[in-house]
Image (cartoon, rainbow, N blue to C red; front, side, top):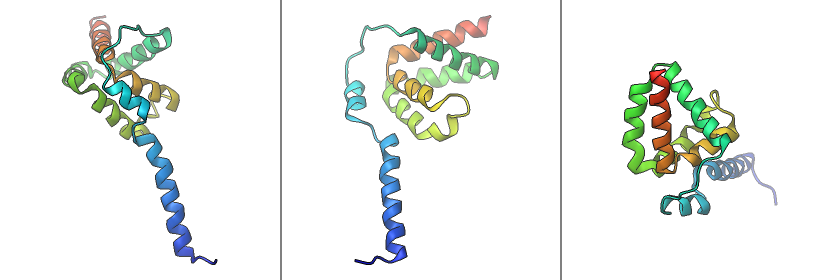
Length: 127
Protein backbone atom coordinates (compact mmCIF):
# COMPACT_ATOMS: atom_id res chain seq x y z
CA UNK A 1 0.00 0.00 0.00
CA UNK A 2 1.37 3.39 -0.98
CA UNK A 3 1.05 6.30 1.40
CA UNK A 4 1.30 9.91 0.50
CA UNK A 5 4.17 12.00 1.86
CA UNK A 6 1.67 13.94 3.97
CA UNK A 7 0.33 10.80 5.66
CA UNK A 8 3.88 9.58 6.22
CA UNK A 9 4.85 12.93 7.73
CA UNK A 10 1.82 12.91 10.07
CA UNK A 11 2.58 9.36 11.21
CA UNK A 12 6.19 10.32 11.93
CA UNK A 13 5.00 13.30 13.97
CA UNK A 14 2.63 11.13 15.99
CA UNK A 15 5.41 8.65 16.67
CA UNK A 16 7.69 11.48 17.84
CA UNK A 17 4.94 12.94 20.04
CA UNK A 18 4.41 9.57 21.70
CA UNK A 19 8.15 9.29 22.40
CA UNK A 20 8.20 12.83 23.83
CA UNK A 21 5.32 12.09 26.18
CA UNK A 22 7.36 9.41 27.92
CA UNK A 23 9.46 12.19 29.48
CA UNK A 24 6.46 14.30 30.50
CA UNK A 25 3.82 11.76 31.53
CA UNK A 26 4.25 10.37 35.03
CA UNK A 27 5.12 6.70 35.24
CA UNK A 28 3.32 4.26 37.53
CA UNK A 29 6.35 4.36 39.84
CA UNK A 30 6.27 8.15 40.14
CA UNK A 31 2.52 8.09 40.82
CA UNK A 32 3.11 5.52 43.55
CA UNK A 33 5.72 7.83 45.12
CA UNK A 34 3.38 10.82 44.82
CA UNK A 35 0.77 9.33 47.11
CA UNK A 36 3.09 7.44 49.44
CA UNK A 37 3.64 8.55 52.99
CA UNK A 38 6.89 10.36 53.69
CA UNK A 39 9.67 7.82 54.11
CA UNK A 40 12.36 7.89 56.71
CA UNK A 41 15.15 6.83 54.39
CA UNK A 42 18.04 9.23 54.17
CA UNK A 43 19.65 10.79 51.16
CA UNK A 44 22.74 9.30 49.56
CA UNK A 45 25.99 11.25 49.31
CA UNK A 46 25.35 11.81 45.58
CA UNK A 47 21.91 13.22 46.29
CA UNK A 48 23.25 15.50 49.02
CA UNK A 49 25.97 16.73 46.65
CA UNK A 50 23.35 17.43 44.00
CA UNK A 51 21.25 19.47 46.44
CA UNK A 52 24.37 21.33 47.59
CA UNK A 53 25.22 22.16 43.98
CA UNK A 54 21.72 23.50 43.35
CA UNK A 55 21.83 25.57 46.54
CA UNK A 56 25.23 27.03 45.59
CA UNK A 57 23.89 27.99 42.15
CA UNK A 58 20.95 29.80 43.79
CA UNK A 59 23.12 31.64 46.33
CA UNK A 60 25.75 32.54 43.73
CA UNK A 61 23.05 34.28 41.68
CA UNK A 62 21.79 36.09 44.80
CA UNK A 63 18.38 34.51 44.46
CA UNK A 64 18.24 32.92 47.92
CA UNK A 65 15.24 34.85 49.28
CA UNK A 66 12.97 34.36 46.24
CA UNK A 67 14.05 30.72 45.98
CA UNK A 68 13.26 30.08 49.66
CA UNK A 69 9.83 31.72 49.31
CA UNK A 70 9.13 29.70 46.17
CA UNK A 71 10.31 26.42 47.70
CA UNK A 72 8.35 26.96 50.92
CA UNK A 73 5.21 27.57 48.90
CA UNK A 74 5.86 24.34 46.99
CA UNK A 75 6.23 22.10 50.04
CA UNK A 76 2.51 21.17 50.11
CA UNK A 77 2.62 20.64 46.34
CA UNK A 78 6.02 18.96 46.08
CA UNK A 79 4.87 16.31 43.60
CA UNK A 80 3.29 18.87 41.28
CA UNK A 81 6.43 21.00 41.49
CA UNK A 82 8.56 18.06 40.47
CA UNK A 83 6.28 17.49 37.48
CA UNK A 84 6.76 21.14 36.49
CA UNK A 85 10.48 20.38 36.54
CA UNK A 86 9.89 17.66 33.95
CA UNK A 87 8.21 20.30 31.78
CA UNK A 88 11.15 22.72 32.23
CA UNK A 89 13.75 20.03 31.53
CA UNK A 90 14.86 21.31 28.10
CA UNK A 91 15.66 24.72 29.57
CA UNK A 92 17.59 23.48 32.60
CA UNK A 93 20.14 21.19 31.00
CA UNK A 94 22.71 23.99 31.00
CA UNK A 95 22.98 23.66 34.81
CA UNK A 96 22.75 19.88 35.16
CA UNK A 97 23.18 16.84 32.96
CA UNK A 98 19.96 15.09 31.95
CA UNK A 99 20.62 12.27 34.42
CA UNK A 100 21.27 14.70 37.29
CA UNK A 101 18.19 16.72 36.40
CA UNK A 102 15.99 13.60 36.38
CA UNK A 103 17.40 12.55 39.76
CA UNK A 104 16.80 16.04 41.14
CA UNK A 105 13.19 16.11 39.95
CA UNK A 106 12.58 12.72 41.62
CA UNK A 107 14.25 13.98 44.81
CA UNK A 108 12.05 17.06 44.97
CA UNK A 109 8.91 14.92 45.02
CA UNK A 110 9.61 14.39 48.73
CA UNK A 111 8.83 17.18 51.18
CA UNK A 112 11.85 16.33 53.32
CA UNK A 113 14.14 17.02 50.37
CA UNK A 114 12.60 20.46 49.82
CA UNK A 115 13.10 21.25 53.48
CA UNK A 116 16.72 20.07 53.27
CA UNK A 117 17.29 22.26 50.20
CA UNK A 118 15.84 25.31 51.99
CA UNK A 119 18.11 24.68 54.99
CA UNK A 120 21.13 24.35 52.70
CA UNK A 121 20.35 27.61 50.89
CA UNK A 122 19.95 29.42 54.23
CA UNK A 123 23.24 28.00 55.51
CA UNK A 124 25.15 28.96 52.35
CA UNK A 125 23.65 32.44 52.36
CA UNK A 126 24.93 33.07 55.89
CA UNK A 127 28.47 32.02 54.93
